[in-house]
Image (spheres, rainbow, N blue to C red):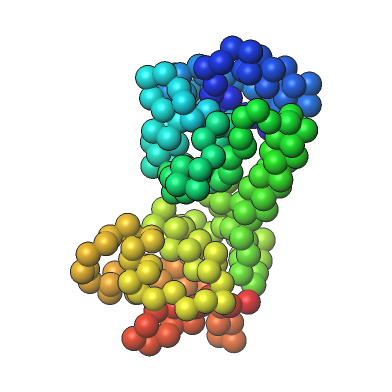
Length: 220
């Protein structure tokens, strides 16, 4: 597993790097926000340890920027800030967790393990015979590969993530298309028809139901 540590205090950075490498993790480091953004744009990471107060760009700015194109990699803030307002601000920016300085390395290690486990579980989504590997952007049905466009993939992913819940047209257009104004939601039907055709459901299979006038629901 590869971890990026973004920390400008040399002592803390060395302590974290040495400790995590001894645990078998592959570690890259950055000492300011701009360097972190450059690394994140070129390299892939399984988890990010991000200091809040950084030179050039704050950890909050780094987090917001990274979340524009990566929504799955866990981000843990390392921070002396621990008010409710600041905690909420970090979570809204896209952080998954935070740990207050000074911290126990053992506690940090356990939190990292939990986030790795949760992240790995979240990469595989299932719906009946359908398996989605989010990390590889692959879909199979009955062990046979299905090729979906990016938008088809995201629509199916959204429905499966909300399995058992009715997803309204307005929710789908906002979450999958990122459109937050009045828009012809008929485009959803076009993509759903394409998905159903590619998945080639048998007649008795009804894993994605249309709720007329409302939206869709996915169920095993």
